[in-house]
Amino acid sequence: MAVVTAGLYKVILEQGYLGVEVRNTFFYLHSIGSDDLQAECAEAFEDDILPDLIAVQNTSLFYNNIRVQNVTGILADANRDPVATAGIDVGAAAPSFLAFSIRLNRETKETRNGHKRFCGLVEENISSQFLEAGYVTQLGNVATVLVADISIVGAVFTPVIARQDAITPTNWVVNNITSGTVSGFVTSQVSRKAGRGI
Image 1: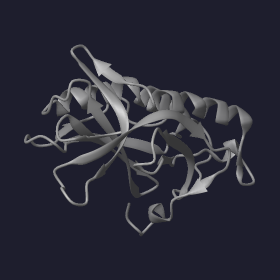
Image 2: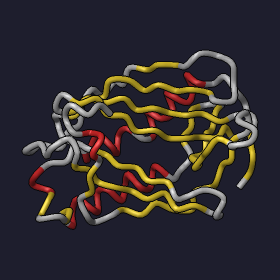
Image 3: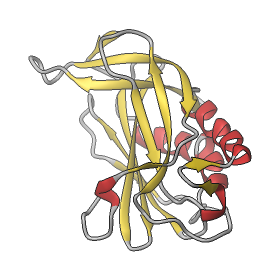
Image 4: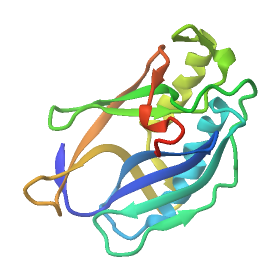
């Protein structure tokens, strides 16, 4: 755990699914604390994360934008149009509020564990409230990349759990991620119900 004032990036994956705008947020720390590398972070995220996500999200889910904020820097956000425009998992689209969940396990107690919930499930991968075993195995690939560094030539970014310091908002408390745990249960994200926004 550490308090950082430089090199922290917030990646926002903007998606559309069954008429609902969906966002997933991730934090990354630059390996040597450099700021204003938003475009590089967006490119690394697309190259290293999206291929595994695409494989487990259905064809009704669309990738609209990768937006990166350098929360400790001064330059404006970078926006990147993903080359892959949609998931490739074929089947009946599950409702927008149903999701699979991956817990990002913290190293220390200074923050909570992280949780990522992704919609775009295929009904055929769901049995009652459980995910099919073969699908859970695929989700393990997503968990693996979410806890690994992302990089392009000349820039390496490490995934972290981050929160803004309540007393000094320019400081950010970051926690290393030790592993990712896939839940075998279907979870829900009520805010993603149609008509409720993100």
